[in-house]
Image (cartoon, rainbow, N blue to C red; front, side, top):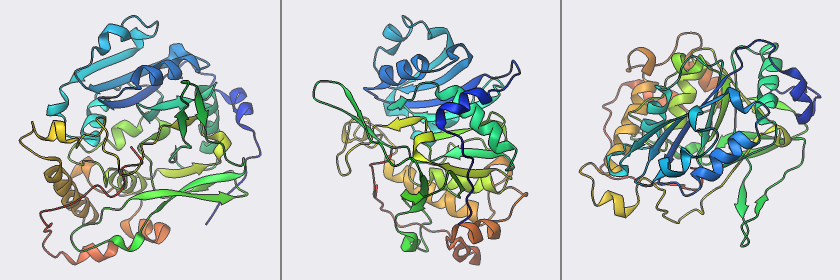
Length: 347
């Protein structure tokens, strides 16, 4: 597993900012009936070193009066707010695709979930780190499943800290779970000691930072649903020459509010209250996404939805160790009429 050391502390990245005027950051944020949306947006802008350079594409899938509080915030003019009835939503990948249509050529791209806490100076730190990585790697993307935070009973925030020299490396929970009917896997974090940055093969939808042109080269696939979304994005990014990188814990600029596994929340797209009002159920969307991921692996998807040409599928298999080659036999792409959310602790 290749790795390298930069030897620069998190706070020192603030001196590595881009001297040009094109330092704007587009933030892709999809929210589904999110009780912590205001908290996340406030944290995003309050902790930024240069908040005036942040532009948010917010896809708010709720019936909440978001505009009532949003338009009173000092940053309201920097948030392009689209509100969608949650019954009409097609899932997180669909919503993130819509958010990307609000991209206006910003130099940098940040993607986070709508229940996120930010470190102070996160924007300068990430720009500086990316500039440093660009001297070493082609088209780097910084991504991982972030460390967590939670709210105490008194409302105070408690963050989960890790040893500074531990890299958050993404690996499949059960790599042997691939089946003829589904290539969809769930992923988790493996802590790697004594490294700063390690090239990887898996993007986390809850934290991505890279150059803005990523939106144009690897647009979000609106036909994916939940699980499999990140595999789809990772394959398409890697084969287009992007280099996925995982960083040490104290350089990760965000913390994630993880849901408890096994609990169905009203901020889950598949909550029974919403499902009862939909014609097309979440199981159908997930089944279609399972089929689409296999079609991607087989090279059956056209244009920007398919594999790139700068690296091959075999290169990805060699890097990741994932047995995607099993799907190249061109057997009929049939999916059984049932599936389940295997791990809901990540969104």
